[in-house]
Structures are given as C-alpha cells and as structure tokens.
Length: 166
Image (cartoon, rainbow, N blue to C red; front, side, top):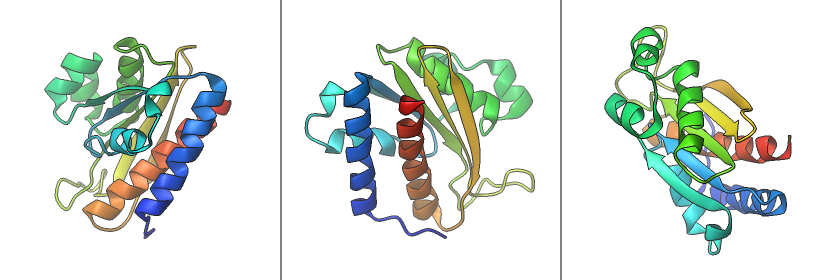
C-alpha cells in the first residue's frame, strides 16, 4: 500500500501544469471513483485556468451516458469498471469540451462493491488526445477507500504528463 500525501499530489500537479503549459494543451477530466479529486487538484493550483478546461463527475452509469456518450452496450457488456468504458469516458470528455487532452477514471474504491474478477482497488484510467490517441491502463491498488483514491489520482496525473509529452 502506498501512502500518498497532499504534498505529493501538489508536487505532481505542478509538473502537470508545467507540461501542459509547455505543450499549450488544455485538460479535461472525467471522474467516477475519484469524485472530482483530480479536478480539485488541478484547481488547487493558482493559474490553472491557463491549462484546465473543465471536469466531469459521472458517478452513475446514466451520467456516463448523458455527459460523456458512454455506450449503454459497453456498460452492459463490460461493466462501468472496464477498459472500454474508461476509454469512452476519456474520448467523451474531449468531445464535450474544448480541451486537447483528457483523463478518465473508473474503479472500485471500496470498501464494498468488489467481486472476484473486479476486486476492491480495481481502477481503469484512460487518457486521450484530440489526435484520437487513446490509451488506458488497469491498476490494482491496495488499502482503504482514501488510499485507493489517492493512488488513482496520482497515477492519473502521472499519465497526463506522459501522454502530453508523447
């Protein structure tokens, strides 16, 4: 289990800001299990309006469909916590914003809701760029709800930096 402090998140968001400003990219977020925490980290930094465009908190499946265009068939076939849904969320955030790059998170933070195939700590993170590049990664975090969410936020931010540079 990784113990991620507020200071660690703040240091990472400064790196995100520097990377996005250098690339002249605007960011949008689409969050489920983190409930807007990535967007909060972004807007905690003064001057973030130069690189942060908007955030979507789509906790319910209906919100994922309504706000991000996630397909009902994807939710039914793969479930909300899946690669397909994370990627559709990331692309949907781009399509419904003026941003150049996006991050989407969907997962099971616990303490309940896990299954044998998708245990608590399962998180899919997707990143997309206007160039139609979309990538995603499966994470299996350990710890309590807060710890799982902090790990998800930190990994989402690290991925923004990587995908903005690539």
